[in-house]
Length: 162
Image (cartoon, rainbow, N blue to C red; front, side, top):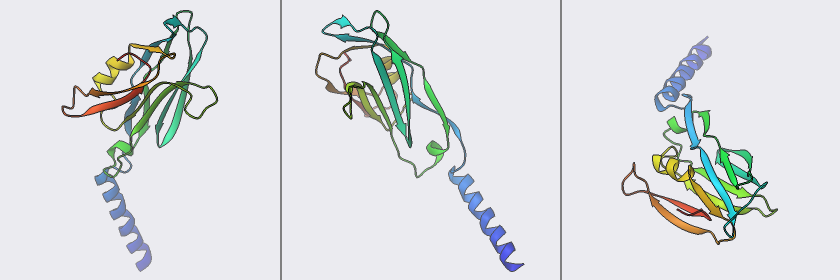
């Protein structure tokens, strides 16, 4: 009897701490804003190309899009239900990787960024909503200021004009 009461008290105490620190409170979490872009090579639209979006946050989520006649591709907003953001001990970032699979580990990079702050930022919404990417160009690294978080920036490695 003593063991079962003490075990019950211990479990209730653990549940109270878990609730207090948000370990089990699931919420919607935006992994990526909607993506709309145009894929070019030397300025020419690339039709029929499969573009992949990999979003990694504990696990990997992969979406595919095929460019149309004008090289346009798109991905919808990606939202998951998770308890991770409410966990005060979680500091994991979202890895955003948009690429063409060419058999290499990284593929032909269109966009790569590790987002540790504001994955649903209006700065990212604007950037991801109007990508013009020329895969014949070498990717460049940009530090883009986060409008909602002064003094912070997103580092983005991309073939797209920013």
